Image (cartoon, rainbow, N blue to C red; front, side, top):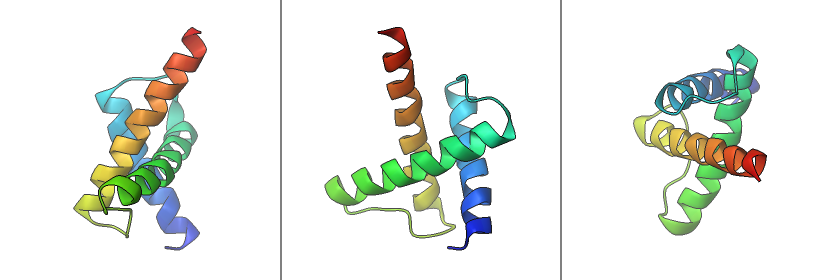
Length: 82
């Protein structure tokens, strides 16, 4: 995917994750970064454990990216709490 696709993909995934679990990743830039980090983390873990990764603009990729974004939110909340 090109950089523009990653930005759009990250924005959508980050917005969905912020809607499901409100976090301090505010604004458009925060949602883009959250979504991209979530796609990378979710894609890595999904491929490693379930054989499903981020392969483009499709439903499976968005589910993996949103799950990864939620995991990023959880990790950040745990690190800031300690």
